[in-house]
Every structure is written in C-alpha cells, then in structure tokens.
Length: 313
Image (cartoon, one colour):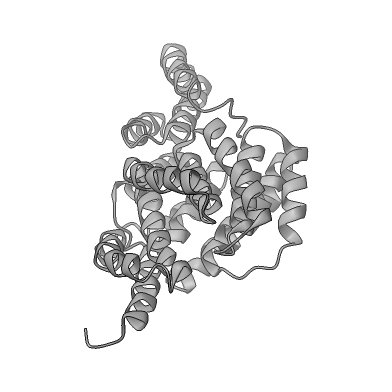
C-alpha cells in the first residue's frame, strides 16, 4: 500500500495476467477488481499497463467460461472506444473475437477478428496484432477456408512477437491451418507440444485450452492423460466439461459424450457441444443404434446453426 501508484499498477497488471493464465480465474478477477480503479486514475500516465489488468480479466473470463461477463464489460469498452476514436478499439475487438471463438460463434468471431487485424495493422498499442491474426486463422480454418487460414498464418509468421500470453494461440493457429490442409497428425504434434510446454511453465489455464483442441483434432487418447493432471488445478466449470468430453472421446462412450454435450451447451460453448453430439452420433451408428445416432446427429445440426457454418473434423 505504501508503494507508488505506478508500481502498484504494474504489479496488478502482472499478477492478474499470471493468475489468469495459470487457471486461477477467481483470484485473477479479484485482483482485477482491486487494481482497475487505480488503473483508471493512472490512465493518462500509464494507458497500456492499465490495459494489462483488463487483459488478465478477459483471459480469466473466456478461459473460465464467463463469456457473458466479457461481452458486457469489453463490449462497453469497445463501444466507448468507437465513439471517442481511441487507440484501444482494435484490442477490444480482439477480445470480443477470442470470446466468440470460445463459444463457437465463428461468424461473429470472424467479423471481430478481421476488424481487430485491420485496426491493429494501423496502430497496435498493446502489441496484440499477432494474437488477432492467430484468432482469425483459427476461425478461417474452422470454417473450412484452408487457403485463407494459410494466408493469415503467413502474415502471422512475419510479425515480431512481444506478448508471451498469446504464444499458445499462435501455435493453435498454425495447427488449425495444418489441419485445414489435411495434416491432422502434424497439427496434433504441434498442439501436444505447446500443451506440454504450457504445463511445464505452470500456465495451466492456457494448457487446458490447448489440450481440448488436441482432442478436437483426434488426439483424445493423449489429451486425456494431460487433462487429468489439470482438472483440479484450473477454476471454473468449463475445464470440467472439457475433461468430461475428452474422457468420453477417449473411451468411445456415446452416452457420456451426449452428457458432455449438454454440459457444454449449458455453458454456451455451442460448437464444442455440437462436436460432442456429432461424435456420439458416429459411435451410436457404428454400434448399430440408428435411432440414438439420428437423435444425436439432429442435436448436433441444431447447434451448428448458430456456429457460422463450421467445417471441423
């Protein structure tokens, strides 16, 4: 408390981001709530560092599954930046894009990511352009536009990188581009490597997201071994729903996959839920349970209607 306001803003920024990427979302949001009023007081002197507190809060929200909270808070910041024309509009657009991607709302994610990339090319006060490109590449690959995904990754690879928090997303972008081009094995190797690297540094929140992506691309057998170590270390219902889905995929358990789909749907992770039901339908069909397969497939199709024409494995 006796330190300078400048030192305290730096500290709040660092601790909020660190807690968020380690999967301690409740603690991260608590520090963000404590630090943000001070950051507002110092916004003229330290605009970027104060934004770090918001950034940490955003990561805690979208990795913790608190999508509505992020939309409300960042949506208001986005609207204000648009009205006054400040330089943070691209960063807020990027946060909204990442949030929409987590929910599987690919059309919305593409719109915000494209806007973020365009704005951050012009002015990038938080060094977030590589992150925005990474989100855009993932969206394009998941919508089936492999050439566009490769094009975005090529631009991404030309960028200098300064923000370690986005490193996992950069690798996920490259992996989804590889998957979109047909190299699923290469994509899985890349994601498994970044997941293990994040685990080694204690970035359990980021690791849990990468592990789930590994399972989505057919690596459930490896993913289940990794997620078991994190399920008790990461806050929130999202990692538990992912863990249920990964376990069910690894065990080829259609009933458990449908249950996981219901849990993911309740969290508004619509594409994850649709994929869970689609996998359940395939397993039911292989076992000759045609009625169960039809029901699960129908639910998957209903959910994908809100997902912006996904084309994922």
